[in-house]
Length: 212
Image 1: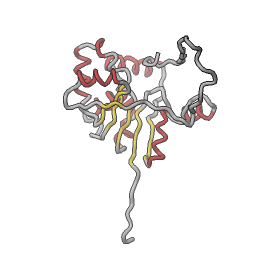
Image 2: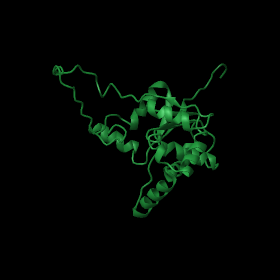
Image 3: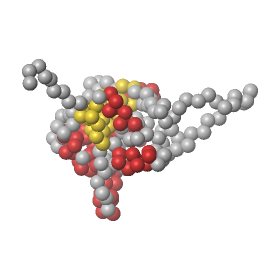
Image 4: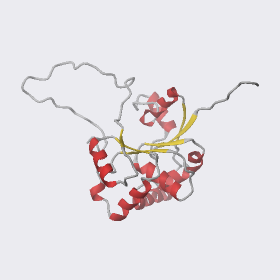
């Protein structure tokens, strides 16, 4: 056919924490147990023209579960989870991650030559809060691997300040505010005004270490 141009969507692979299975997430969302139809609402990228796939956790028994925990403890990131998703990681155009447990693992596999040099967005949540407690070896590993991703992102101004101070000059950390889906969490006016002269108390319930 003359003059026809075939285009394809950018293939994104979201490497998310091992306990976040996207298929289970969809089922829980349908039951009203999750706020989004995918981990972190990343499925919304499809509306922007991306083709997105999610990492899948391998079935774990007692022994393999122990191996995951030992290796993650030793490395500081989930290397085995990334390794088990290596085929899908090598087949995508860009890698998205949501925590340091994931991007450090993908970056390590790229350093080892197991993954191709695919562009990566590396998001850190707790890494720079924990920086003062990391030993010299762990800090050196992070500094080395932080030079692999094309984008190193954090969610708070405090983490950004630490990242700019401790990472190599070649790494340019970015602040990306963490958003929520207004389709699920709609903005509502307060039902009652705060008592005059008394502080307004906000209760935030959850198991997120940063928020808590």
